[in-house]
Amino acid sequence: MKDFARRMIGIDRRIIFLLIAAAVLLPLLRPFGLPIKISPEVRAVYDYIEALPERSVFLLSFDFDPSSKPELEPQAVALLRHAFRKNLRVIGMTHWLTGTGLADDIFSRVAAEMGRERGKDYVFLGWSPGAGSLVIAMGQDLYKAFPSDYQKTPTQGMPVLEGVKSLRDVNYMVSLAAGNPGIEMWYVFGKDKYRFEMAGGSTGVIAPGLYPFLRSGQINGLIGGLQGAAEYETLIKRKGTATAGMDAQSATHFVIIVLVFLCNVFYFVLRGEEGKSN
Amino acid sequence: MIFLKRQLPLAVTFVMGVAFAIQYYIPHPVSEEAITNVSKWMQIISGFALALGLASIFHVHAVKIKRQVPGWGYSIVLYAAMLATIIVGFWSKGETRVNGAQTALGWLYDYSMVPLQGTMFSILAFFIASAAYRAFRARSREASVLLVAAVLVMMGRVPLGQFLLPWTWDVTQWLLNVVNSAVRRAILIGVSMGQVALSLKIILGIERAYLGGGRDQ
Image (spheres, rainbow over the protein chains, first blue to last red):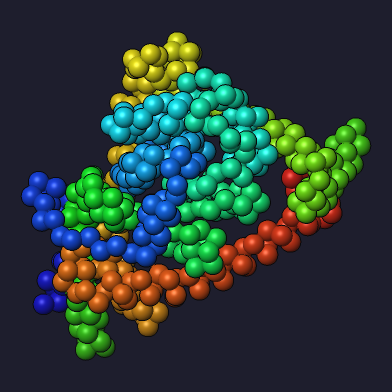
């Protein structure tokens, strides 16, 4: 038993890699489609957008790069579909230079799918340096911070920005963040001073760190990781890549739980045997 | 020279630090105009950080190649990739799309950067599983608490766990909203107080490491 336990504890890591690969691939090929439960923090974002009057101004900040695409793209797509369905005016931007192309692609794709027009229903401002100071600049004067959008069209006079002078005129804001600059920065330099309501969407890794902001009301909702994205897809009744990915995530979590359990069984077997021999 | 190197930066830091700490509480048009202009300056200065970063990475890897330190071949790959991206970027005039058509820069972004970054992040799942198997052991009481909490959250955050053990959902929500929030809040308050103290030390000229040149500064 002792030898078996020792052999199993030192198992070739490539076997673990194979198990994880199977846990990811098999549910994607044969999904089992379990129901998704909705958490209060995700429902809060949905309810707030749902309650906004038509043509309200919704700012979506894509604060991530391609490395977080699997988790944050489904969140962005679901939020944009909801906002366009509600006929909101959507302003998009990013604080992450390497995420600019990805953000523009997501924006253009969802807008085309929902039949929305650039400049009239939405605008993608692109990237500008400064992070916190950019948020302050937008709070003071949006047109000085972004004189033109990502397509180099002057922002001044755009129908989508009619009546919008600064962040004070934004009705709701969501930062989809994979780190800093992201949700915390938007709160500190934006919401706190320019008084707009905001929520966050984040990768699963950083979501637990944002719960204090949620509990204190500094953000009114939080979409965490692929699970959060799947919850939002369920709320808007439009299943997408997040819902499809949840089966793979379920299976992967279970493989890891079983591995941790087995590793502890072998550990206690070895410890018990060593205790006896002493 | 000592005035330009030492007294002037200290004076600028003190004046700007005090002025913009007070500015936050004065919503007068003059004060608002000042923050509008200064935020634009800060944006411009932040832009220079990119140029500095680029120069720094070129320098670090040039040294590695020159000294042929272990792994210097990777530095050549980095140089080649950076130069290729810069050349393609200039050639495409910095545009990823023109009239809906993808440019060379757009192709490079969509078919190399996006999959490469995605692959790097995806590999983490394999290494985390392997590391969890080897290191996640109930060696002590504290490690056991962490282990149980982690397993419960892993169950409660996925549909299969919620289906097999529905109570893990409520336990997970409680762990995230109460226990996790309390601990994170304590860390945040500590870090924030440290930041306030450090900012005050910089504004008052007590902390001068940012001037460079060691302790005698």
